[in-house]
Each structure stands twice: as C-alpha cells, then as structure tokens.
Length: 313
Length: 202
Image (tube, rainbow over all chains, first blue to last red; front, side, top):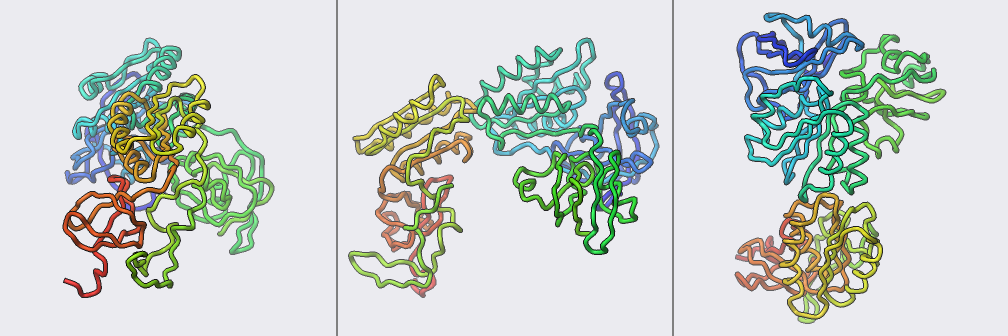
C-alpha cells in the first residue's frame, strides 16, 4: 500500500537515455501542475503485483508541470523495472507523493557529488537546484568502461565541473584526490551501488569528514535470508513464525495484519515499528546508530529478531 | 559535552537584592542545560584525532602550553597555528589571522581554540561563518574574561564584565540591560535586553 495521499499520473513521453535506461515523463491526467519537491526526492511508483519502487525525480523541483524519472532495467530484479519498461505513452500509473530523503544542505559552501551508474538520477535535480540558486557543485560520475553516459547532454549543460570516470581504479583515484582538497564547509553526496557508497563513506571518514557532512542515497540491496525466529504479538498474545526466506513484514502481513510499507528494502522508513522487545538484528539503512542502540524499534521489511521478539501489535 | 559548569546554574526561586558591588540577578533564569549557553570543559579537550589537518589558535595566559600539547599529538599532519599570549589585541590579531587560515584549510580539518571565553566565542563564530560545523570545532576557555554582548535594542556590540543574570549598561543606547542566557552562535555574543522589561518602565 502507498501511505498517504496517492497521485494518479499518466505517461506523457518515453525515451531511451542509454541501453537499459529508459526515461519517463509523467503528468497529471487533468493537466494540473504537480506538487513541488525537494531536490533529491524520489517518487513511489506502484509497479504491479504489490511492488512499489522508488525512482529519483530528475526534473525541475519547483512547481513542475511534469515529473521525470529514469529507470534502469534490472533483469535479475523483483520485476518492477520490467513492468516500467513495458509502459507506453498514455498508460496510467499509481504513484505516491514525492518523498525527500537525500536533500542538498542549504548551508553547504560547496556540494561534492559522487555517482555510480544509475545513481546519477538524484543529482539531476540537485544540479538543477544548484544552478538556480547559484550553489557551487562538482560531480564525479563513474560509468562502466565502454558504456554510454546516461543523461550526458543534460549533465554537461547543468554542471561546469563534471568528470566522467571509467573503471574502478580511475574512480577511486579521483575520489581520494577530491576528498582531501575541498573547501571548508563542503558536503558530500553519494549515490550508486552499495559497495561504492560504503567505499566512498569509508574514505571520507579516513580523510576526516564528520558524518554530518556525508549523505548517501542507497537503492537497497537484496539481503541474504536470515535465521528463522518467532514474534509474539503483545496485544493479542498471538505467536507468528518468521521463516528464513520471509521478512518479518511478510509474516505480519500473512497473519492478516495490514502494516504500512513502501520500499521493503530498509531504506525509506515507512514500515518503522516501535515498542519492540527482544534482541533485534538490524539490517536497514534508515535508523540512526542511537535508535539502534535504544533497541526498541526496527524496520520489519529487512530486520529480524534473534530467537523470540515481542511486537506491539 | 563535558559536565556543565555549576557556576551557571541559577536557582529560579532564589532572589538576591541589588547592590553596587554585586549586580542583581534575574529571577526567571533556568539551568543552562536548557539554554544556548556554551559549556566549557574544565581541562583542555584532547586533539580531535579524526582530523586530517588542524588550525590551532591560542590567545591569553596559558594558551601556549595547551597549543604545544595539541601540536605534539598532530604528528605529521598539517597544522596552521597562531598564538599570542601577551598583547591586549590578541583576540583581534587572532581573528585577522584566522580568516585566511580557514580559507586554506580543507574539509576534514579541525579547529582547536584555547583562549579567553570571549575570544573563543568570536573565533568560533568566524569559523562557522567560514562553513565549519560544531563537530569540527573544539575549544578550551583558558581564563574567565569579559563577556561579548549585543544589545538587542540598538544592536551595539560591546564587552562588559557580567554573566547571564547580571545587569550592565549599554554604551550605545544607555539602557540598563540584563545579560540574557542566550548565546548567538552567529555573532558569538550573549544577548542583553532591557532590565525589568515587564516592570512598567518607559
């Protein structure tokens, strides 16, 4: 389910920006203007069969007439991107309202953006805002050897300090050099494959960057199954089993209890559960270290319990 | 943060009478844990080992020894340092030195200040204006001095002996002011407003 008010949209244009990467322009069926959004926001899109994928909005963030998203076709994925790539002009889509989880910091003196592959998408709206507000920004963009650069023309027009890097070694060298030569007050933004994000954040920490300056947007990776465990529902006394290959969220829903959720990958924060007791195995990217430490809330879409946990349900 | 300085806790029920020697304390002040007042550590904080480079500033008596300790811990990491223990204008001179130093420092560096409280407030305000955040600034107030104040009525910046709750005269507009327990981190000054504002005075 999509929490909050939904937004029905219709596909206005489809165009291929790179092999396997297709851009969609969406508009309101009545032609009404769409809600403004914070740069870096994503749009929850209902992709059939209960799947909700989140795609970064790549267009103008202020009073837009259309929304634009770019979708990488992942043939080994859960089917959401296959559904998207089958869309034609005129098709209708059920969407949620844009959600901000990767906003530029307005007080930053400079914005250092690091993107890998399809991780470029949130930076398109960042760069538009940077241009509009006269913010200083530079972008390092890792693109696979031999692959075309998605959104190349737009990026050229939007960013005066863009470097496209081919291959891991070139990217690593550029990141290392950038992290030790930014003016005071720079904020770091990174979006791309999980391993790249972890690598950049680790290098930033080693170069003395406080965590407050480092911002990451993760796609959410496919997690390995965990050990089976059980959950007691405190309010009803029911006991539900969570098998290895199912999430706690799956098990709660299978028990007939509706619970809000969105990304189901431990990223968006929608399914947060409070009042949990027992040993929690956190596997999300949402909760802060302090919240994990407190040990009384979890993201049931990815996180699990050890042995037996108690839920406030 | 270190434990708060008990000197700053003022019992809201405690009332003292005004006298020439001891200014009257304001009755409604709350414990500093709930205000924007800085809390100063009792001993110099250690060098922030996470830093990749350092800007070190020391003014006032005792600052040199603190700076030497920090510099030793920095090892072979880059350090830009300023110290001036003796002159009246050491705070001004430090401020003039600090701006270009911060321009040449890079993200990942830390600022460490050992100075009288007024200089700490002023220099860290400069650093914030240059883009630094709290996580990048550590300070040690080496001696108590005068407080940097701003009159909220005429916006005059001035220095005076006086802690939150004390009354002082504004050199700009002449109003009798009470030093409020609010620090403007942007200005590096405590706000002061007219004493007995509710007392029916014109």
